[in-house]
Structure formats: structure tokens, C-alpha cells
Image 1 (cartoon, rainbow, N blue to C red):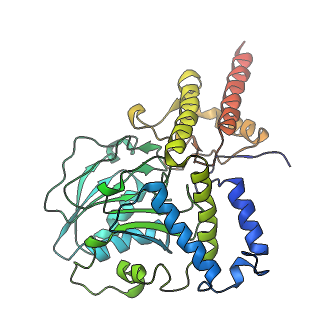
Image 2: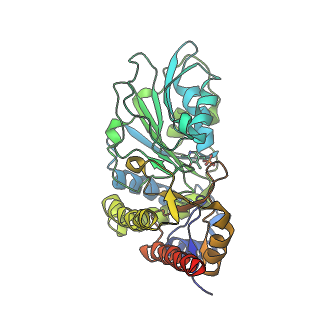
Image 3: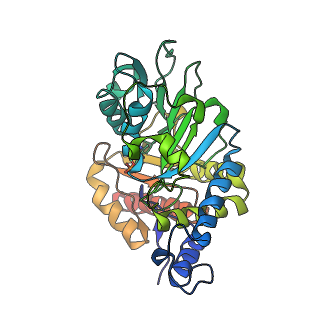
Length: 361
Ligand SMILES: *Cc1c(COP(=O)(O)O)cnc(C)c1O
């Protein structure tokens, strides 16, 4: 089978090693001669998997004392509702920065529980930049931001901090670079972009922010219940957690988040370099806010879109279609994608340039 270069935005590419190890565990889990998905999550073999997953998250991100690491279900979208449910009392106000579709969905849920103050937005330009120069009201219950905007290809180059609890949706750039966890009160990420398969969501939460709202919280939506249960209040998603652990171990054995950042920057520089050089293409995100995870670009002449997509297909470049709200193309270049795959895309863009100049001559 030919190698397919996987630029899918999500679920996205995972390390081959993580997939191979997961296939092996489906056949024979930890020497039990049983499949990972047909044994008790309370057996010592799976307990060891969960413990190692928590420990590896803590190690990769240098998580300080006083924080809990949880593996939950319901996707990042469930966090949009769990966060205000647990942290925003009726009558209180939470501050949100609106940087796109995902931020908007988070805002929509928070409004069910309290007041929302959208302190900054880039909606005026279809979210093609990260708003700057905003200030955080000191009486807000928390600040919510989205570190990387998967659809628009924008990313905070430097993550903001505040004197109130800061909560960050890192679904599409978790473990792509070092993060000072102590500056956040909660970090969360649906696994399926840069950490694992769909079906599990990572939550890193500072214990001391919990238990302050007056309302009753259903058990499954209460962070404290999941902390008490060690992510096993109910049956956890054993397979997504296992695959995530294999991916986390791959990150660790490949130099951790510092090395990931270096690799990701090299890949991004290569691709943005070609986008800026090649007269047929242009980037859609503001240059200073360009994401190193999702690279969005268009053809200056969009009547050529189908033709470029056909060339991409012929060269086994998969998942390049842009999100419908931006159009054009999006190359998601997550941790597991190799620089060779980025080079293959750059080669196709250069070939397309030759084809087009040949056609004009
Ligand atoms: C994909 C995505 C989500 C939604 O994740 P689900 O796990 O599908 O709920 C939320 N935030 C960001 C930044 C995303 O990229």
C-alpha cells in the first residue's frame, strides 16, 4: 500500500507506533490472552494503564501539586457545559474570548448557567486573527480562551494569563508545545486532534477552584465526583485511554513537548514558507497569529481548487479540504505528522505552480 500523508483536522493522525501497540492490545492485553476491550476496567492491568496515562500527562506538562488529571467522556463539547455548571453561579459573570466556532459553542453553554461577558472577538474578520489588547474584568468568575482555533488556523503565540481563574480549550494543540500549567486553573482537550482517538477528553483541573457554586450538580457532570473516582466513577473509555497512553509515551520518547515544539515549528515554517513564496497560494490567518497545528490557505484563483485537489489526491495527500466556513485548504500538521509529509505537500504545490505556468506559456 502506498503511504498516505494524513492532514486530517480531526480525528487526526496518530503515531504508527501507537496504532501498532493498540492493535496488539486488542489481540492480547498485557499478557492476559484477552482483548483490552473485554476485561474489567478495575483489573490491575487496566488500572496500570490509567495510572500511567495520568503520570505521563503530569510528566509531559510538569503539572504542579494541587491539580487533578481526568479522562472523561462527552468530548470537549461536554466541557463547554461542565465548566459553567461547576464554576459559574447564577448572577455571576464569566469572561470569554470569542475566536471562532468552538469558543462560540462554549459561550452558548455558559449562558445557560450565568452571565457571559465576551471581552474580545475576532468575528468581524471571520476569526482570521487572535484579538489583542483586551483586559480581564477582575470580578469575573473565570476567563475562558481557546489556545488554537482548528478551523481558522489561528493560535495564541503566547498564552494570556489573568488574576482570575483561567480556563483553556487546548483540543487542537495539547502537547504541541510546553505550557506553564500553573498559570491555568483548567486545561481541557478532546483527544482526537493531537492526543488520541475520539471518545476521551483530557481535563487538568486545579482542585481548589471546585465546590464553590451553590447549585446541585449531577454526578456525571461534577468534577469532584470524577476526581474522587480517579476517572472511574463509571466505566471509562478503555480503548481511547489506551491509545492515548501510547501516543503520550511516543511524545515522551521523542523528546517531550520541547522537542514537539521544535519539530512542529520546522514543519510550519516549511509550509508557510511555500504558501508565501508560491504566487498561486495565500494564507488566510493573520501572519503573527498563524497556527503551527492547522495551516489554512487558499488559491488566489479559486476556480483552480478542484484541479489542485485532484493533484493532491494523486499524490496521496489526504484531508486537505478547508472547513466550509473558511474554504480553500487546511493542512493539519499535528505532532505525529512527519516533515516528509509536509515536504510532499510542498512538492505538490510547486508542481502545481509549474503546471500552471506551463499552461500559460
Ligand atoms: C474539535 C474541537 C472541539 C470539539 O471537540 P469534541 O470532542 O468533538 O466535542 C472543541 N474545541 C476545539 C478547539 C476543537 O478543535
